[in-house]
Image (cartoon, rainbow, N blue to C red; front, side, top):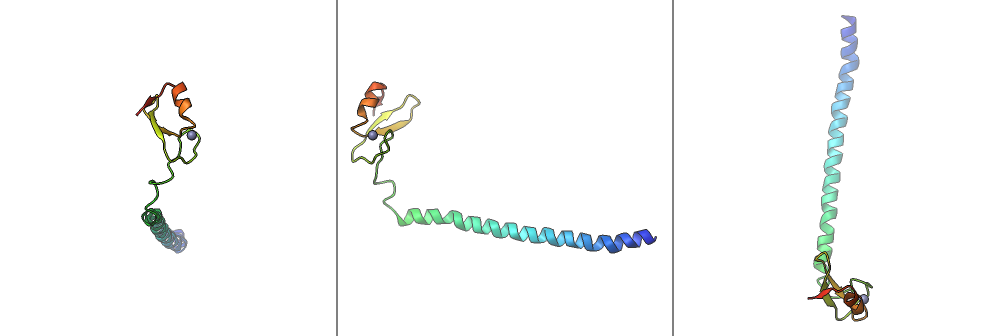
Length: 99
Ligand SMILES: [Zn+2]
């Protein structure tokens, strides 16, 4: 009987602590999730504030230099690549199909 009392005395605070700590961990997880969600939304807002993104600075798929005019070719894998005038010979050498 004494053992049962000791287990109750020692065990109950441990169980209460475990429940409390689990609860606290849940709160932290929720808070982190909230922060993450908030952070995830920020790039979208940045994209909205810079509408030029994607419309300017077309880059050559080969040399990665910005070019005013790109010629587009279909890769062997079906990937579309844009090449600047300097890289056009590469497309010819690789026998790429101009689009
Ligand atoms: Zn190029």
